[in-house]
Length: 311
Figure 1 (cartoon, one colour):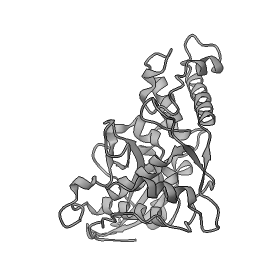
Figure 2 (spheres, rainbow, N blue to C red):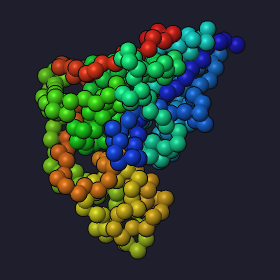
Figure 3 (cartoon, rainbow, N blue to C red):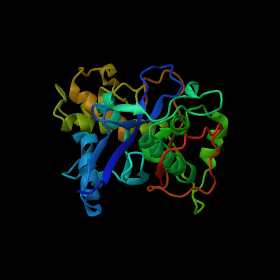
C-alpha cells in the first residue's frame, strides 16, 4: 500500500449572519465533522476517482442536476502537495456556489481570519499546511485571473467581488479604487471582464427562477402557476439567501429555503431586503476563467506563513 493521500478542500463564499460584519461574504473551506475530506490511495491513477468521491461528500444533492456527478459539475483544481506528514498529500480544491454554504452552513469555516487577527509584525497567525496551501493557491488565482467571479452568482454588485478579495487577504480594500479597477478591468485579450445590468432585469430573472424552483419542489401551495408564485415575491428582494421566510405570502418551509438558496446562489444574492437605493449589478462577460491584463493591487498584501508544501 502506498503512503500517497489525496485531500479535497472545497471553497465557497459564506454569508456572515451578523449584519454589521466587516465583509458580508467570506471565502470559506469545507470540513465534514471537523475533518478534512481525505483518503489514502494505492496508486496515482486512483487519485481522480478518490477525489471525485470526496467532493461528492461536500456538494448538496440540490446542486447537482440531471444525474451528473459533482466532479462533472465543479472543477477540481491542483493546489499543490503537502509534505508536512512526511509523505505526499495531493491537495485538490474546487470553487462551489454560495448555496453550498447556505444549505450546510455548519461545515464551513472562513479560510483567512480578518485583519484584527493579524499580529504587530503584519503576519497572519499560523495556519495548518493544508489551509495555507489552499489559501495561497486561490490568492494566486485571484491575482492573475478572473477567478473571483467563479464564486459569485450570475449577477453581482462590485461590493461582492471586493468581498472575495478582502476575505482572502483578511483586510478591507479601498471601495473607490476597487470599483474603478473592476469596471475597467480587461482580460488578456483586451475584453472587459464584466458589464452593468439593469436592476429590473436582475429582479425579473431572480423572481422567475424562484418560481421555477419552488414549483419543481412541489411546494407552491395554493398557487396553481409559476407566475402566481412569482407574484408573491417581495420586490425588495433579488436573490434571497436563506431569508425566504420574509417573502410575502409564503410559509416558512424547508423547500422554500432550498429554492431561495439556489436562486441566491446561481442568479443573484443579497443578505437582506433592499431598503434604499438598489445596488448596481454586473455580470461577467467571459464565461470561463481567463487571465487578467491589469491586475488588482491588493493592499495591504499580508503574506501567508510559510508551509511545508510545493505547488
